[in-house]
Image (spheres, each protein chain N blue to C red):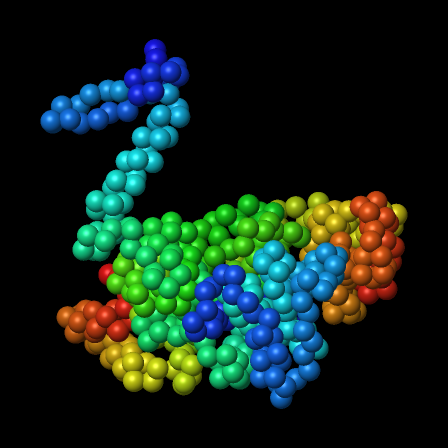
Length: 156
Length: 329
């Protein structure tokens, strides 16, 4: 059977498409199958995926200093320049969260070895958490855990 | 106590970039002298530009773990302290990559060695830093602390008892990566693997050090258990393989690197099981580095083809006779 997409090559498999609630089968060749998958992936990305919170800018958002686009960053995990982090701050957050399970730095800073206020609070909360767990105060433990996650910028 | 020499070395690397410069393709020539000046009171350093080294010299630095393979591809430069414990790569994936490598499990010490160096370089170069994202890096996998803490581990028994896969999946679940001996994308050689943290953001440097050390200690325990199981399952076969390995290494005329790495692993196991006795562990470790292809050429002072290298390597194995002997019963 001939591929129903390119109508040139031999079809070796099929894809299912739902149009108006009805499922239809389209027989395709391997090349068209790959192509259709790529198209489907990029449309999902644009519509619902990593770029959903971009208020219309979509994956075309880019750094005005070096020209690196959000799409390039999301595909390669490579950022163009330090300014990209400022300009695309909110847009790259989901990508960072996906990789690091966190979006907030709590380690050392150029001026001090540690960002002390935040770290002190974390240390105190961790101590309280140990105490809450030891005394089986689970409700309190849960709320401390939530605050710790917030401070560490971790996703749930 | 015989700890089995399971943890060979500890390495801490910090990735840093200079404010206002693109991550790739930045002209880093002018910063070389700034880095050298910033390090003037931190020991004796030498600057090596990749363009100024021939391919053999470049590779010999990779074999000694002083630079990454990527630094050669990027055409960067390395500033190396004369004790070979500290090296600073300029123009790799990030503008600056500071690393400290020490023997054994000493990640905390390695980080402490790097801290004053990092501070001096930060003052001199103004590293890109963001209060939310921390130290800004070329790849999002390094952002935050920019820290990669890794331990190089010798895991023959886990490999030979087919337990390594299970061990790796356990380690991976703890957000750690397991790689080959020369880092990302490299294969394991001589049963040596690198374990390192994956997470660099939302965690402090000290917690990274503690978590990698914790995982490494668990892997050591697993390797020791596997060594016990290996000996129990076929003591005669294992002893035979160890002695044959020692025999071949000390009586060969030509030997490839992969055969050497396989056999020396069994010699090291023999030392662990007290079948063999090593009088100079440092000399044995240096030999393993020195028989690597580029270091062999450096040792001979000229380019050697594969066959010549195998002969020179075999002649260097003579040293094994002097430092490793059969254990007297």
